[in-house]
Length: 208
Image (cartoon, rainbow, N blue to C red; front, side):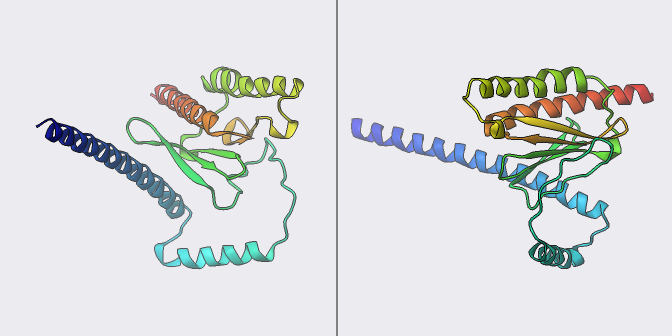
């Protein structure tokens, strides 16, 4: 009888692990579907149709193969650049609680992160809490922390976190982040989503 109880406990524990694994896979599938929907939305906005996506991809591959490697140019604040990288390692959509698009985050293999706010929202650097929270309390804080590590010779200047806000006038077109590890990516994703959500709420109130 005790052996049967132990076997039942083992089976129940195994069942629990399977259920947890299944729940995690379902959550991951939902995130991937949301990402795919966001990417498809961008392609449709740019005028692509399903029938010519393969042609466009083939043309882009040929163009990349023919081009020579060039030194990356830093984006200027007066000219919007958009995401200029290759195929990203991950694409993360940021949305409101009502499933409205706020931005897309492109994560590259070299730990570079590109944040492209939804252009239809017209996010401005002057709308709180962009400058006083996201810039001053998150981005500047991360940069200062790494600057101190460089001073202590615990980090090289090339490994230091940095950011660049690409603007068109006062409008935010892109936020470029360098040297973002996995832990900081989680913090940045949460902080950026919260900031844009609060900015959007203030913008809607102003428009009423």
